[in-house]
Image (cartoon, rainbow, N blue to C red; front, side, top):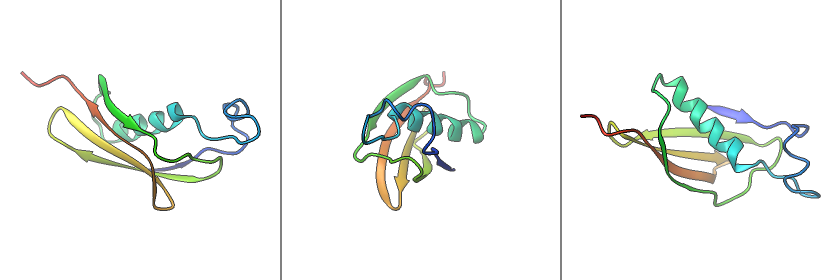
Length: 95
């Protein structure tokens, strides 16, 4: 999945004044939309998330998902080859 946050998005002016960056919650929301596009139910846990680089307004972000078993899913977001978010989601362990 590829997405872009337009420079005029209402969440940007306060995050941060003078040098807007895309809020992390917007990146995580894109990850959840990518998961939904696969047909999986919504995860119940965010096991880890790391934001190693900022995303600037207008940049294209590519979300990739990597299943790690029935109850875990790794994700990575990249802008122009640079990792901007990586982490892992979890679901209840199947009985």
